Every structure is written in C-alpha cells, then in structure tokens.
Length: 145
Image (cartoon, rainbow, N blue to C red; front, side):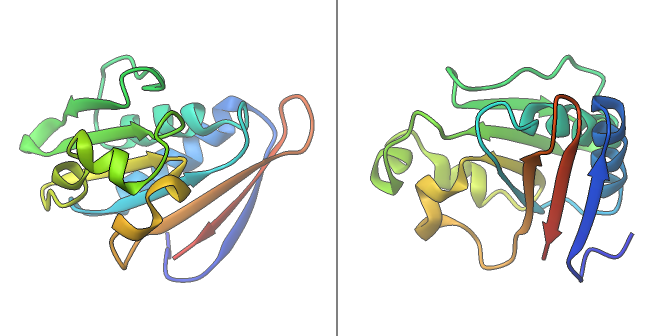
C-alpha cells in the first residue's frame, strides 16, 4: 500500500473499515503517527480496532474517551498508544498529562483522535485519516500523508 499519495476509500461496513485499517497498519513502521479526524460516531474507534489487529494486537480495543490514552503491547516489543483528545482543551492541557512522552516515543505506533486539540505538538510527518459518514454503515476515508 502506497501511503505517500492521497487515497480515498469507500467503506460499506465496519468490517471493510477494519480491513483497510489493518492493511494501513501493516505497511507502517514503529514511530508512525496516525491522526484520526471525523465527527462523533464517524468510525474512528472502528478504524482503530482494525489498525490494532493489523499490528498483531489481540486485545479488545476500546475508545479511550475517558482515560485519554490506552496503551497496548504489541508482538516484538513495540507499543500502540491510542489517544482520544476529545476532552482535552488544548496543547497546554495535553502537556499536563504528558502527551509529549507518548508522541515522541520512537518505538510506538500512535493513533490520535481529535488531533486538532494539540496541533502544535504533532510531529511534522503524520498520516491523516479523515472519516466521513455517507449513511448508516457507509463511510468515506480520505488518507493523506
């Protein structure tokens, strides 16, 4: 999968979204940061489940809305940090709980929901996945390097 150019996918089910996310994850290296953009209920957590599976994570992935960060150990020693910054006001608040330590970890994959809350703290190179509702089950996923 070439993640160096913009791609647009149309998903008709959660399974299709998870499969795409799994393929994306399998093509990335530790240290990668993936920004997940979309309204509430757009499918960011569905995408995250597939992404985790693509990295070999068998744990049940849940939305970290209330915990802010969920950490998962991956085969081979890498980690996955799944961050949901919906309840974070801004970069200063995020720094207060140590978000920079997660973002700067070169051995971890980072999935960040609501990244606009910490725009100034994000690494220069990120993969952005924007998910848009197209119906009950249908979604459009726009992936940009």
